[in-house]
Image (cartoon, rainbow, N blue to C red):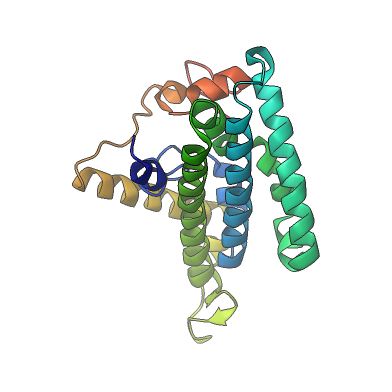
Length: 229
C-alpha cells in the first residue's frame, strides 16, 4: 500500500469513528462543545502516533503471547504523558475531559491499530497510519462537537453564532441529540463513500465485519456474534 493511501484511508474510507464505528464512548460523551471534541481528538491522535511508532519499533522483540498486555503498557504510558502535559498547559480542557482522557488507554481505535497495523508494518508507515486515523477521529469529534454546540447552545468555541432571540435546541446537548448527530454523520460519510465508488465496511455480522475484529477478539472484547465494547 502506498504511503499516501495509508495516510488518507483513516480520514474517510476507514474513518475509525464514522465508518469502523470505534471509540463511540468519547465521541458521544465529550462532544457537547467543539473545543472538547478537538481536545480529545488531538490527545488521542498523539497517543495513537506514539504507540504505533513504539510498537512498530519493538514488533520483533515483543513475545506474541503477551503482545496485548505489552501494547496496553505502551498506550498507558503515553496517555499519562499526554494527561500531564494537558494538565500543565490547558487545565480547563483537562478538567472538561475528565475521566474520558484516562479511558484513551482502552480506546479500541488505538489497540486495534496496534494489532492490525503497527505490529506488521514499518515505523514510517505506522506513523502515517497513526496520523491518518488520528486526523479522521479528530475531524469526526470536531464535526459532532460543532453541530451540537451551535444547535444546542448557539455558540462555537465560545463565540456567539445564533442570536439570543432564537431558542437553542437543548436536546442537542443531551445523549439523544448526540446519537442523532452521530447517526446523521455516519449516513453522510457512507453516502460519500458510495458516490466515490467505494464500499462501506460490512457490519452485518456484528464484530466480524469490523476491521479491528482480530485485535478486539484477542483482547476478549469481541465475539463472532457481535458485542464489541
